Structure formats: C-alpha cells, structure tokens
Image (cartoon, rainbow, N blue to C red; front, side):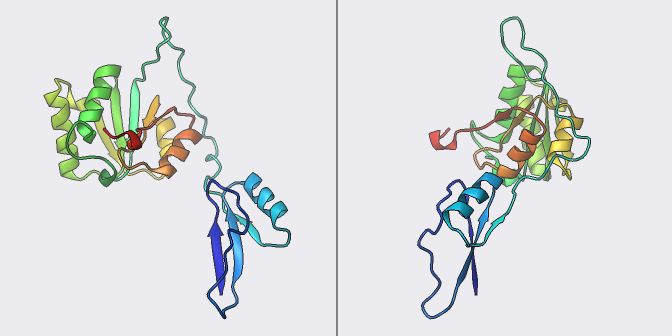
Length: 193
C-alpha cells in the first residue's frame, strides 16, 4: 500500500503520517516546485520525494506581450480584458454577476472583453443584457469558446489584463495568464461583495 502526500504551500516533511494499523504504508511525497523538492529531500534523507510540477513550460514560440507605457497621468487602461472558465465559477446575479462586473470593467476601460470557456446560451444572453442595461454595446463582449491553451489565446488576442473568475477562483488559468506575461486582476472573495 502506498500513500502519496502532495505538498502545496508548506514544506513540512513527515506531518506524522502513518498508514492504518497493521498495514505497511510507504509514504511518497510530491513537491510542486523544484526548490521545495530539494528542501524535502534535505529534511527527510532517503524518503522518496517526487517532483510534480504544476506549471508546464511555455509553448515553443510563445512570447509574452509587453504592455504599453502608462499615460502621462501614470494610469494604464487595459483595452483587452479577458476571463476564462466554466460559468459556474462566476456569480449569476447581483452586483458581482458576470455581466454586471464586465459592464463596469468596459465602462472604465473603453475597451473590449473576451471570455474563453463553455458558453451556455443563458450565460451569454445575461452578460449581453447587462451591457445593454449599462448603455454599452454588447458587441464589445466576445465569447470565442473553449481554447486548448489560455496562455496562447491571451497572446494571440493581445490581452492587456486577465480577470480571475469570481467568486470562485481558478489556479490553472492564473498560471497560464502569468506564463503569458498578462497582468492578473483577482477578486478578494474573503472580503465579500
């Protein structure tokens, strides 16, 4: 019997783990970063510690986009903002509803917004209706659908800022946006609406 322990942010070696009584259990630790693997191996000589990288290298030829300089006032206004993910990660009603948030973003930036991921008809209609209710052209919001690589799509579409899903965040898309060199905007769900 084998027990795998995945270390997230911590680098605690043993954690006092043991298998059920009477059953031999071999513990294998999985580190998510190379430096974490080295620390675990140093803390537990002889214990198996495997590297389970959660971020892959950038695809060949991917060149992160360089942002334009800020205006004379020192303000940067993104022209292309992006979200990605399943609609279930976004709120459907109220001030933090997907469409309401995107309407405020577009009113402030004057740009356009793209959403990558599954796009059920009700999700699209509600978002476009929120833009219309805010007096904005709903064509400033596009739904290209699902993409194989969020990082590549951000570069291809010249994204200026990536908005994390709200209120349910997603780690993988944040990693891909960071790999593409796109600034991240996150919602503080702990602070509430």
